[in-house]
Image 1 (cartoon, rainbow, N blue to C red):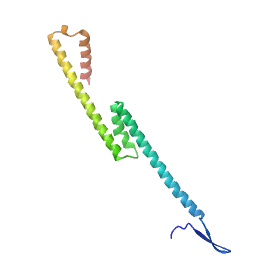
Image 2 (cartoon, helix red, strand yellow):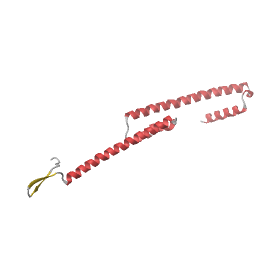
Image 3 (cartoon, one colour):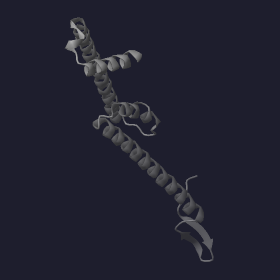
Image 4 (spheres, helix red, strand yellow):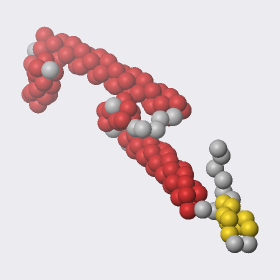
Length: 148
């Protein structure tokens, strides 16, 4: 049996049509509430996702790479609404961050190796070729790096 929005009631003058009964009104209000609730939930989760990715982009463009990587990797997994396009942007940014961090580490290691070679060459020539301030600074750098 289908839901009838026209109620026919028997009255003294014969059958009379009523536009809607109480049950029909309640049913329509419940359906309208469900649709409105779904729309609000969908809108708010999309807004949270876009705000989260905007925050990650801000971290990325401010060169706060470690926080941006954490934002794209770990925090994005907790979102309820995820788009493929935003995920691809996130994965591209993660790859770029990893390559930048790896490149910085390699550059620092090359620079440190070059500094160590220069320092050792200066020590072979004699300590008069290296000022005391530089010797202390290079020693502090080498001790800090070797402790890591």
